[in-house]
Length: 102
Image (spheres, rainbow, N blue to C red):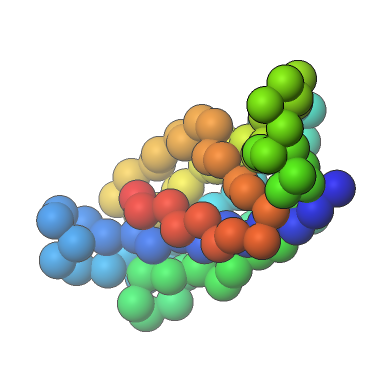
């Protein structure tokens, strides 16, 4: 297994106003279990801390006949005073930071 990273950026409207009060729960898509037993928070700019997530090794993307996807997916539940958003299938690649805008 390898490591990829995930960061969230939350805004209201067309990235005009950052969401400063929100909690993010990341779930393993395969098991629906909460990852690392953590709830992420966002800062005054609407950004979460980057979290390390397990994913598949890079070499799988170089194998044309690989039966496993070269990435692992995670789901997220984002809860704020103004909204709740369920995000399914966020792809995480080895050695890459995925930025999920909400």
